[in-house]
Amino acid sequence: MKRLPNQMAVKLKTPSEIEIMHQAGQTVCRVLEHLAELIAPGVTTAELDDQAQRMITQAGCDALFKGVPKGGRALDFGCGPGRAMVKYQDRLDSIDGVDISPKNIDKAIEYLDCAGIHRTTLDVNNGVYLEHVA
Image 1 (cartoon, one colour):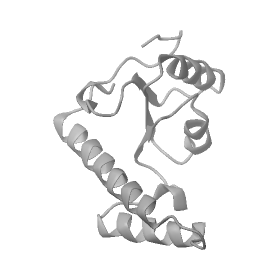
Image 2: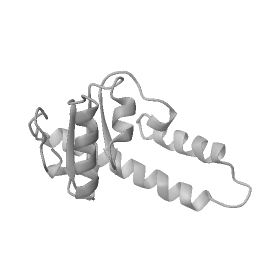
Image 3: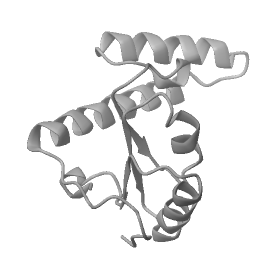
Image 4: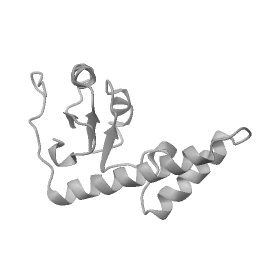
C-alpha cells in the first residue's frame, strides 16, 4: 500500500476484529445470493431492500444501506476511489477500505488525503484473506 504524507500508519486487526469482519462478509454474501434468486420481472427494488433488511437484521447486523449509525467502525468492501468513505466519515469513528484494485486504493488514498480524512485504513485485498487487512 502506498502511503501519502500525513497518512496514518498501518494498524493491524486483532483476531477478534478479523472474525467480525469475516462474519459480516459471510452475511453480505448470503444476502446477495438470496436477492439474486428473487430478481424477476415485477419485483421492485423496495421489495429487495425489505428482504435484505430482514435478513441482515435476523443475522444481528445493521443494514448500512438504510442509514449509517453514529460512531463505530465500518468496512467498505470494494471501496473503489473512496467516495463512500468520504460520505460517511463524519458519522463513524473509522472506516476500513478494501479493494482488489491497487489503482483504486491509490485513488482512495489521494482522495481521502485531499479531503483531510485520516481515520481510515486501506488495503489491496480480494476480501478472502482479511487477516491482512490493515
